[in-house]
Image (cartoon, rainbow, N blue to C red; front, side):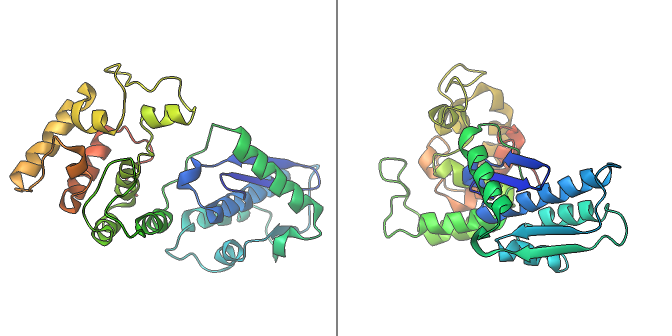
Length: 279
């Protein structure tokens, strides 16, 4: 794995994939994707009469990823990927020996160096990413790192937030992980809305497809006609629960921990954030 790219190389074949977007994927997860590609190649080869092998050896420089495959599945980051890899390996012919090798820094192993190079190229050259379920632990780490600043401003020059970062972090950690990721992205001005995607050259227009106006955080939360019913439900619930927040101010919505569960439900109801699925 390399950033948002992963690759696997054998003597006869290679596979690469871009994983992301990069801000939502950890290097640890890309290493697991690389291991999954290696397992898939082995599985594909085992189905070919001309590609029989007596033993499978997989080399990787990430001890944590290899250890996750070696041990029984645990509720930790990357567990879903380790289960997928195990499932693929179980399809290999019975009694096929499988050896996992840790190679520090890929030193002296040409194919591993090539895998690193291919992964880096996949990350740098592709805008089409395969999607993964959002890693809660990865988002929490990013949140803690971002909030570890001695200031009341979340991002200078952007939206100003006054709530203490620790309160925000605790509130985000309490949410379903899709909600954590979505609210974090809105606060960080790095979301899948067209305004942000256009700045990263991922879409051709920054405008909302329904309203033909700039689709930024303010438009999404306050004005977009497409989500009127979801917004009405969101505001009615705020009123019913007597939460003290001005729903016409983006800064208050995104800076009120008590509103986060309702905001997460609103985001999920809109279906606008494609990665937001209940897990």
